[in-house]
Amino acid sequence: MPVFRDDNSAEIAAALGTLPSGSAVSVVATRLLDLFTSGSIAPGTRLPPERQLAASLEVGRSAVREALAALEILGIVDVRPGSGTYLRGTASEMLPQTLSWGILIGERSTAELLELRSGLEIYVARLAAARITDDRVEVLERHLNRMRANVDDDLRAFVKADLAWHHELASIAGNSTLVGLLQVVQSLLRVWVDRAVHGADDARTALTEHEAVFDALRAHDPDAAASAMASHMSTASERLSRTADA
Image 1 (cartoon, rainbow, N blue to C red):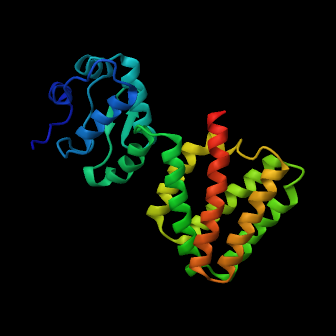
Image 2: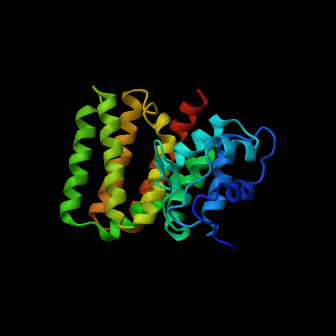
Image 3: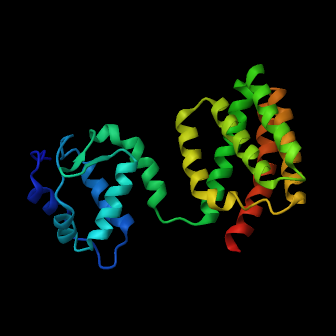
C-alpha cells in the first residue's frame, strides 16, 4: 500500500471515501482510524483541513471536529492551532490506543460491559492472590478500613474507597494490558458506579463481599479469591443494572 506524502490532503481525503447516511461521530472516528492504522500515512503527516474531510465523508464539520478531538485525547493525532492536525505515530504504536478507542466507540450495552467487567475483576483477583505481597496487603486493608469507617455515614467516601480498593487490586495483579482494559470498562461504567450504592444496606453488603475477597487474597488462595470476587461481581452488577435502568 502506498505511503502518502506529507500534506497530500487530496489523496488522504479521497482514501477515506464517503460514509453511509446518518453516520455518527463514532463512525467518522472509525474510518479515520482504519486509515491511520493501515500504514499508508507516515507519522508527522498533516491531515486535510476539517472542511475537506467533512466534504469527503459527506458529514458535518462538527462530526469531524469531535472525532479529531477524541483522537487527540488518545494521543493518535496532534492538533496544532494555526498549523493543522498531524498524525503522531506509526500504525504499530497506535494499536494500543485503538484497542481502547474501539471499546469506547463501539456499539455496546450496559449488560455487556458488566459481563466484561465481571470477568476481568475475577481474573484480577485470581492473579493478585498469587502475587500479592505483605506491603500490598496493608494498602488494601487501609482502603478497606476507609470503607468500614464510612459505611453508615458517608456513602460518597465509601464509594471512593471502594474504587481505590479495586484500582489497587488491579495494580497488584501485575498485568498492564489487563489493567488497561479494566480501566476502560470502569470508566464507561463510572457514571453509574458513583450512584450504585443507594444506602447503608447496599454499602454493608459490598463491604462484606470485599472482606471475603480480602481474606482470600491475604491467604494467597487464587481459587477462593476468584470465587469471592465472582459473588461480589454478581451483586455489584445487579446494583449497577438497576441504576442504569432507572
